[in-house]
Length: 148
Image (cartoon, rainbow, N blue to C red):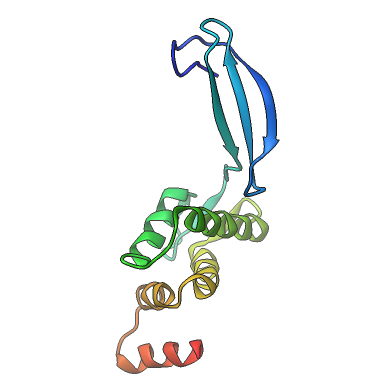
């Protein structure tokens, strides 16, 4: 890994430990050239996962798309960055368990809905209204009744 201070290409790991969230590794590093120290966090990344869209097309999985959809649903809702990170990680674990190299966008949407339901009921309804394309007030009311 390149040094953040002098851009030297060799740094050594001084210490590794499980991060507080239990889902990533925190590494303390030292540059072999300038001797400055810094920390890095390593997280699991879903690679080589294809999402099958409703029209049958295939797209590479993107954490950014998940985060953007969640942020839209959670707009003006109270949550912390730590809670948001934990939500995204829980969703990605569920996706990884459900997928075997590929997953449908419908399945991804259902996983998001399930996790949002326990995280924030208003965000859940917002996401569900877009995801399930509510046609009328009755559809919206039916979804609200399911929450009760």
